[in-house]
Image: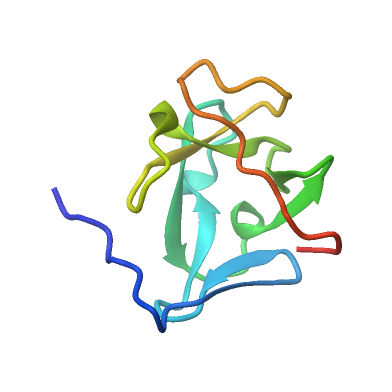
Length: 109
């Protein structure tokens, strides 16, 4: 199994409009396969501007424009390379043992 690239000191992420980008790798946060179901993986993929790459925040939670679901860390493992998936947004951690990824900005992401 391939491991995700490690983040370096020069690697930066940026949110521009509704895209969340990794500037070093030129990838965007994406709901894999434009899947609309709970548990759909969230991955870094080549930026193509599709709706599965558009995000917004509401009540301090990041949400997908594709389905209104929020990315959550799978299994509660908040570490480099942790897997994420989308789930219905609520205040409680997901049933898969993770928790919501919170927005920390006050303006558009």
